[in-house]
Length: 452
Image (tube, rainbow, N blue to C red; front, top):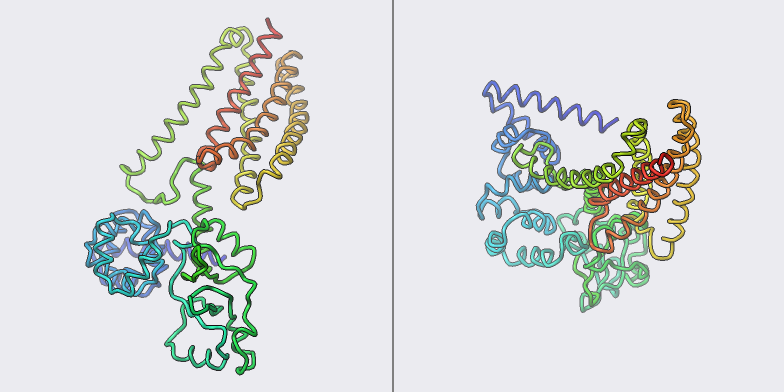
């Protein structure tokens, strides 16, 4: 319900902004923008067509631009960054956390990145460079270097006095990070224990030494799984020598989870996860054209199989009517298996030890469903065309195709992953090609044999 209310509010804002801009009254628009939070302004910008979007950006206060940029998708973010010079980029990133600055800089050319880094003060430059050395889809790329560390020999009373010297704690600080003199991570000190324990005991006595830090090179998807499994709010990140580099917070993990969902959803249609809903025609058309071309190629393959049996189709016209049923049933069954397997792979549940069990399970499911629906379709086809042979043909073809779909739904994503191809991106097209070709080949092949 809150989500629906927020969507309704966004549409109301867009209507009001459109009306105001149409009348040329910019002052009310600017006041409305300044009354919204950076996250809501970003949502409003992403919900606007290009002309309105750029008009709104011109009305955003300069000091708010950096906060708004970090909430925008990569593509929309890049549209605004391309219009900025080095000094403007430095200005909008001032005051942001190191990981957010790194995310923004990664949208820029290398020459601009170097110029922006040189324009920063030494401390900020060092923090951002540390994050930039790691891939953006790794723990090192997600981490924030703003941490509070303590030594194990300190008493809690000293720790509390140290904390009071800060104007504010870094966002989502639920633990203090315990390190030795070499800055090597050795444990966590929950703030709840600092506040409720005897102030005269030492950090070493109550710290949690059994919580392992996250390696900086761990993929972002694995980091998200760890946070989900352990219900973490934050977690320390270390290099290969165990030295503390920073920490990851739950807000960054939520972004990873959201990006993964968008990637899986859009990849099924051959689109990039950063696809802008309101991207211009000249940007959108080429992206979709490539995927349509690939799909057309696979369609030609299926058509070539049909063409082999042209003579049989000419003799038995009913085959042309029933062909789509076999292909469609195989496609749906294969998509069900493919979706389950891709999800299992994303959650880290599928490996060498359980792949064979999964293949066997899907084959049995395919056989059972194949037998059930083959009987239904066979009876319907026999009565419809008054031809029992046709019932046998479509029944056996459907069983063959559903078994093939089940097998392909498991094997294809595993194979694609092994050759470094994204299963979410290529799996559905490859699966459709397999089920179409096998479905037409088995149905028309059996027909050619029985009607010969």
